[in-house]
Length: 267
Image 1 (cartoon, one colour):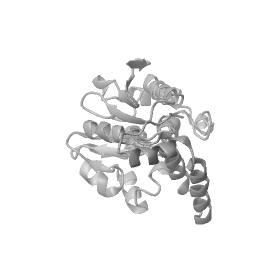
Image 2 (cartoon, one colour; image 1 turned 90 degrees about the vertical axis):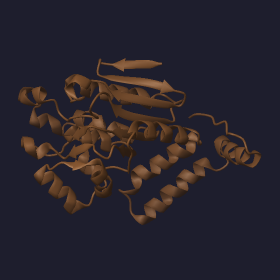
Image 3 (cartoon, helix red, strand yellow; image 1 turned 90 degrees about the horizontal axis):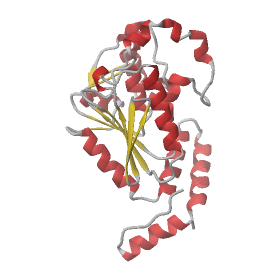
Image 4 (tube, one colour; image 1 turned 135 degrees about the vertical axis):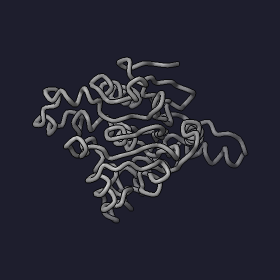
């Protein structure tokens, strides 16, 4: 089953795994107004899908995403600077939410990167929990090239994964780096010559686990970077309390003891 959003993004369900495809291949999946709307609409749609346990995010054609569409960038009337400070989507503005929605989804998101992953595309990929990159993927924190700064959640998403001085250098110079380097730098999790297959395989492995436990783990992971040690310990305890003795927790134990696949109830 495939659903399309604004003729820019396709969402396909395969059991408990959703595959979100940026589908503007002729423009290297560059971000124009319709693409922003489509990415956000797909993310919001998944937020209301209780049966989805993992999401894979990829790009059609020769690239994951080349960043902001140059034609859209040239129309400065469409991007009023003062409007960016308005929080239109929770804690974020519209462009930021296109990246943050993937981090805010209750289920894990895995991005499969290939071709180019520049600027806003890199920030959208960074919203995923895990990133699998082809070793030859070309990545860049591109915004300074256009007289701008990363402003789609990158600074929040890279905090704790990319070393501060290295992020500064890559931002100030907008130099390209490879998928292999991205793992070393902290922008990617793994490399693979077939990142989409690796991402889908991982997503199905995640989907085989208790969705309540996985969602609780993501919730704790999302908040630990912002908390002190005492609050992190308390967050772990609250999450565990919600899981202990639950139906899915009992099923996980029973299935392991009986050497059979578990049958979990979705949230």
